[in-house]
Image (cartoon, rainbow, N blue to C red):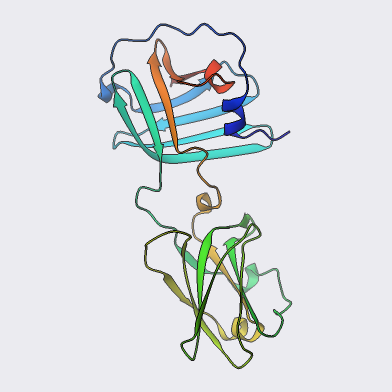
Length: 230
């Protein structure tokens, strides 16, 4: 049974007596690698970096989730704020030996497939299709990674621009190879598979307690455990 982080944070916890809060910590003592202890069948890690960035992951049954961004401390409360840190995904064309779809798109339809070869699709990518005439059309990749537009049969596809949906970054433009133009179907690979997963949360607070960090402000399965520093 798949249970997401939001589900874990929403479920009722057994009664748990939390350790008393530690004295206000020095921010310099917090960076390090933490592992969640005390919660059966749940694996979770937290890396607080000295530069103020964090990486977090959780594994529960068939569910794997992740988040990254910046962390800050105020008093004995550590807050994780998810975000891309100003980074944007980078794309390349699929190599021909990575293509698994050989059937051309139907006439009048252009298809851009976005994902990571042999791993999975990437939804939420805005694809701008440009024809040789200068005509453009835009679509966003859906759950299976497909972004589809309709174009007159007289138009010839020359390039595609890609960026995250909602991003203000410039499009990353890639020329469409002749064999892909002929089939009206091209595939674009994100260069880092981490972009296939969204952020598990936008903000998560942890309180500094004796022995480590404890999820704060929610009554949940994860909050029953303690992130201990290794």
